[in-house]
View 1 (cartoon, helix red, strand yellow):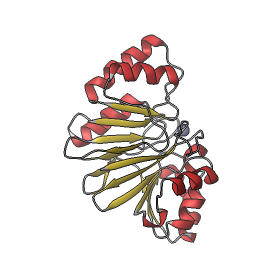
View 2 (cartoon, protein in one colour):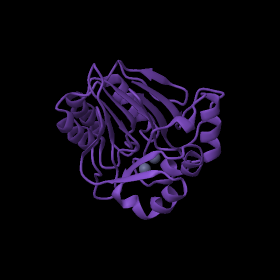
View 3 (tube, helix red, strand yellow):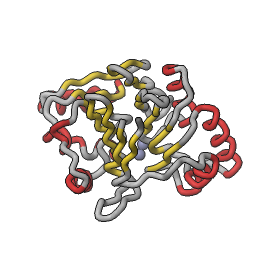
View 4 (cartoon, protein in one colour):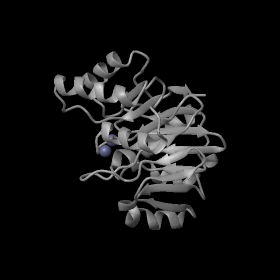
Amino acid sequence: MRITILYDNRAQAPAKEGWGFSALVEVRERKILFDTGADRLVLEHNVRHLEVELSKLTDLFLSHPHCDHVGGLSHVLEKAKGVHIWAPYVMGDYLRPRTRRAKAELTLVKGPRCLGEGLWSTGTMGRGVKEQGLVVATEEGPVLITGCAHPGIVRMAARAAKIVGERFRLVLGGFHLARLSPDELARLAEDLQALAVSVAPGHCTGREASETLLTAFPEGQGLSVGLSLELP
Ligand SMILES: [Zn+2]
Ligand SMILES: [Zn+2]
C-alpha cells in the first residue's frame, strides 16, 4: 500500500499548501482518492507536480461534506469518469446530480461496510458532522485514514478496530484537536496508544496536538503535501 498526500495545510515546495485534505491511496488494484481538498486549482497544481493521473482512479472516498474536503470534486469528476464514489449518506442530494453528469457510480454509506478486499468504511459516524473513515488492511496491520475526525479520533479508531479486530499500524489524517487542553491531549494520546502503533497527524489536527502525539508516538510523522508512505 502507498499513501501520497495531495492536499494539506502544509506542503513541501513547489507543492502548494492550503487548508484542506486529500490523499491518494494505492492498494492492490485500487487507486482511491480520499477527499479532494478545498481549492480545485491547488489540487490541480499538486496533482500535476506529483504526477498523479486522476483518470486512473478507481474510487473516490469522501469523508464528510465540509468544503475543505469536497472543494476539488468538480476537477476530480472531470478527469475520473466512471469512478466509484463512497460517501456519507447525508451527501446524497449534493452528489446525485454530479455523479450522474460524470457517469460515476455512487454508494451512500450508513453503517460500517466492506468496500472490497481488505477495505472498509467505519460507517458514517457522529451526532454533529457526519463522517466516515477509511480502513485498509496491509500485511503488517491495518491503517485508518480520517478527514477531520469530527466524531472524535479515538471513537473512530475504536469502531474501526472492532471491524478489523486488530490494533492499527497507523492512523493518518486530520484529527481536529486544536481546542483540547494539554491534559485532555495527554489522555487522548494514551487512549490512542491502546488502539494504534503509530500516527501521522495532519490538516486540522493543530500544532500543539501534533507535537503531543508525535512525542507519544516517536515513530509517527506529521503530514505535508508530497509525503509518500510505503506501507507493505
Ligand atoms: Zn471538517
Ligand atoms: Zn477539514
